[in-house]
Image 1 (cartoon, rainbow, N blue to C red):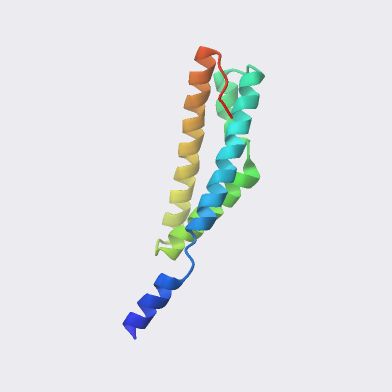
Image 2: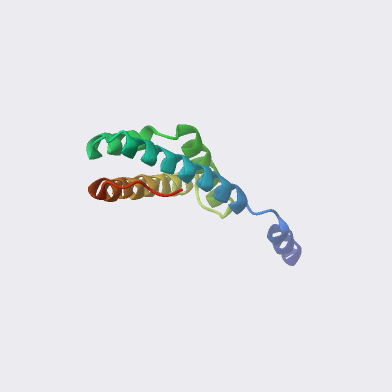
Length: 111
């Protein structure tokens, strides 16, 4: 019985596909926001605040997908939500660093 349960679990579709697609949508939106803010020549402080509220729909979809994947992997609801929030915070920090780099060289990201 245990072996059958393990086989069924292994054959179930993995939620990773949803995480991948929502991650791609979220980061594309963040890249578009980054480029727009660079073109408008906003300051670092303004970008740092705006990136957190940009792409709310994509961000929420990504967080939901990560949370669901973590829950499917056995994490508690609190741990799954914390992990999703940490990943979003990492993307915000990463794009803020990119903004600083592009601003300092007065360049724009490629497509």
